[in-house]
Image 1: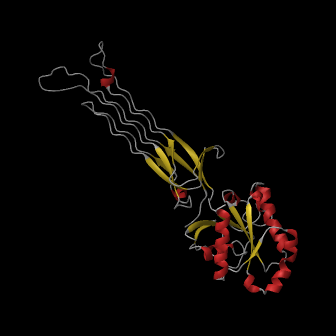
Image 2: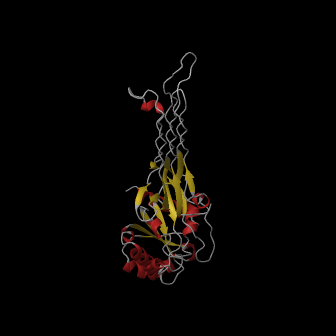
Length: 328
């Protein structure tokens, strides 16, 4: 499924139906009174969050959404049927903005949240409403009110327990695939992953949601590489899993590049809880690994984990560590 995290759409609630101007006509009753019914209310537009959705791609091909209008009133004081509400499903993590794409209207952070975005117009009044002691046969009726309508922006920020970050080819997609049933595209060249991928890992009967954030590079916050297009998806992750390729020469420098990009984009990102994993340990013996990470350990006091995604034992260890961090 293609990924889209931003879309502009037009929404319109249904107009109210018009009231009816009719008069009672029955046998032996020559001058029946007014019996025109009210118009039905227009349908409203309601957003509902759905955890099984993870993209806004459907809004690329369908950008206009209209709820049903209310039916007109009719004789015998019958009120017109109300228009059916329009339900629009969006992924959890979706934010609704005004047309300026800056003013936040609503933020969906839980499953099955509902938000009424546009209210349908009220139905018009039938002539029975205007009967009085001085006007026994009113012909007056009113039209239904117009439903609300406007353009809005939808923005999606992925919500996950763990956000996997690191330079291109660090093995992020491979790790996600090994831990979950997700099947991201994997290849040995930079920027194989062009969209965030989500997966769910299970350990000790508990669920851990992971997001593979496309490869960051030095200068991403300035638009280099894939730019900062996906940095905002890290904002909602509870914990960052920083994956580093052991086969690289400058481990410390590579680590700092990512940390700087996070900080330059939003200082709060650099304050998030972080777990550091060195990947591809299967390519080296223990002695070589100790030499490679010596400088890193002297400079960075965080706890380090050495792993290989090809080791079942390591994968279980990773799940255990992740669950421990997201459960705190």
